[in-house]
Image (cartoon, rainbow, N blue to C red; front, side, top):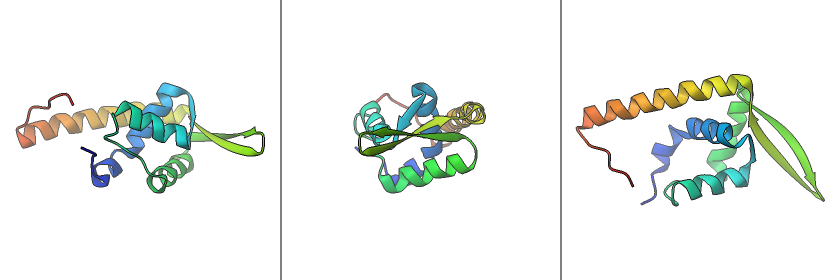
Length: 113
């Protein structure tokens, strides 16, 4: 089962901040593939969702970019700023609290996938 874009939209910043924290720097396609791999295909990020979110994180000062030239190709890498690292911890903790609250609210027991 692939998760709905509605669910992913509300968590995308958290996902990206955590992924960048764990991998130091990544480029867009690499991010989409890593998310797909880690979730066994249950979350598949589109370019239409990924890049606007990365640009928003950059505008917020949470992500910085660097460009590397690979022959004729240009690859744009994203990495967390110091502020981004702090915000990542806040977002991950907020999400964990949200999941715990939803478990109570919906009276469910979360089972591993």
